[in-house]
Image (cartoon, rainbow, N blue to C red):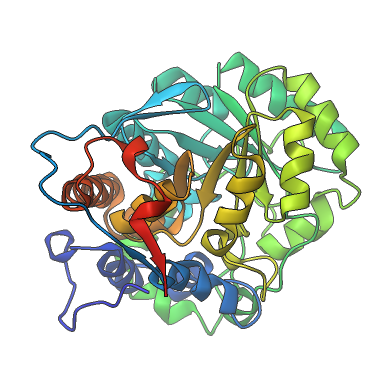
Length: 391
């Protein structure tokens, strides 16, 4: 766990790591919105473990390796990436800052890395496809409404998205107790308990009230929930998503899409093998940021055995818990093709919009480069299990 330094974080220039962005976001957001980003399921044990798991593995560097120049680039799902870092798809981003997905996409394009847009995004698939040239994925929720499912694919095809990523761990919602306590909904519903928090964040309130109307444009032609009808994310998952989704449905979706296809939420070796047998291009080892099954394994804890089982047949991407460049290097040393995270940029978006995301990714970029030099490697593929020791 990244521990914040004990000083006041009051402006963007104070932020030196992801924990600092979290603190600035906490100061600037109404508490129901902050706790939606920050919270997870039940006792949040799995969410905390997602980051803590990295501390159980130590890096063992080589020296005198001639590391004046390092190459951080790689290829993920057929697209060149300047860093082994992906900005994972997350929902409702214009609730956190009025720039929302536009800010995150612009930063991803600047750094030459993958960006994911959620089915529950607050900017349209069409706009993202038209405005941003970097590699893009649609994170796909499998709805009961088959017309909506087909429409999402058609929008992604028309916008020339590079990949569709089916989220497979949300057949029902996790028990998000923080959201229940704060009354968080989309759109926000102000309660007597939360009124003061909204009122004392005037910048956020004015942006929400007087800028572009909040909407979920990729869904709004099919469902009112989340755009015009206030609903918790937990209720949305439980009423709108299809719990009967199975391997046959995933195969049909892959065939209907016809392009690069990824499964997000694979945690067992058995499922990883079945995904490889199915012929997917990539799997994301992910537990949805600890927001679904509390008490489940952390992705980093599970990464090694999954890579050893299927890493020669399918690209394995680690998703979740990443807060430092050293976390990225540890995952790459275990054979991950790339590393993905959501909160690592959401805190920064909430804290300062596009400049915040830019600073957060820039700090991680510098940490990855510096870490490679200190490890004595000039290319990512030089990182191996020999550079790791388990405590």
